[in-house]
Image (cartoon, rainbow, N blue to C red; front, top):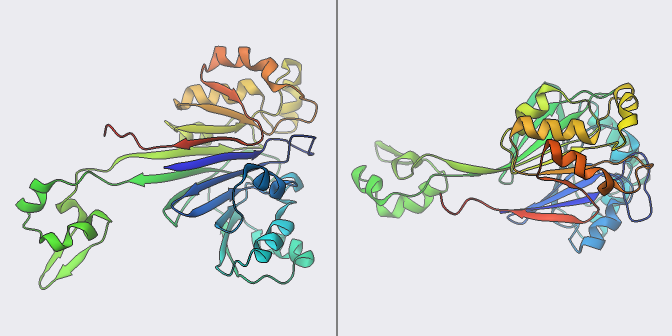
Amino acid sequence: MLDVCLLGTSGMMPLPNRWLTALMTRYNGSSLLIDCGEGTQIAIKEKGWSFHPIDIICFTHYHGDHIGGLPGLLLTMGNADRTQPVTVIGPKGLERVVNALRIIAPELPFDLHFIELSGPTEEIRINGYVIQAFKVNHNVVCYGYNIIIERGGRFFLEKAEENKVPKMYWNRLQKGEIIRAGDRAYTPDMVLGPPRKSIKLTYCTDTRPVASIWEHATEADLFICEGMYGEKDKEDKAINHKHMTFYDAAGLAKRAGVRELWLTHFSPSLVKPEEYMEAVREIFPNSKAGKDGKSITLEFNHDE
């Protein structure tokens, strides 16, 4: 299962009860963060989650409301006695940008490993997460992310016996290992059925609605998407600044066939997002206005 928490939902500037953009997930003892705006540390503390297991930090892009909270977070993680490396993922220029911010956080008891994105789509596998990055359309280079937890096939005793797989290898094969014994190789497909449906979370902010979003969000369990403006008269502003309205996001959710949509990255002028949700739900019924601390646990389908 994958725990998901929308830590901050504000765009451009933090507000009382609304911190800047950040999302956190937890899976199998490893935590992942997407974006780290000002106030992220406070949001994590308010949620009651821990800084220490944060192994991966992904950035959509390098505007201040998405990365300005990083130096303080790194210092806090260091003060929490973390010594294991942290993997940082983001668009090209990542190492230069992070090291510039680290002028005020120069000494850390752990290493940072950088993965810089350059292609239109890239996939990274780490700590049980499958991270798919895909370019979107903002006024600087910006990526959306899929966070996927894969699920292997069901174990079939009949297959194992038919393929004469020794019992002592069954458990290792179920974990995806390939075993060579003598002149024979044992592979997971010799004991397992086809892969079952994964858990899939799609996250994107600061973009116009483009095909790469709905293509990558297809059949996501949860689609967390920018909704900068709910007011109908802000459509031209959204276009000019390469952001999305609530209705753009709902259209993407409908086209992608996602299970649920959460809106985030609200304009500071948008005080009560819920006021616009009735019109949003006319486009995509299972739409919700995000709020700081909103969380969910995504689980595998136990019927499969």
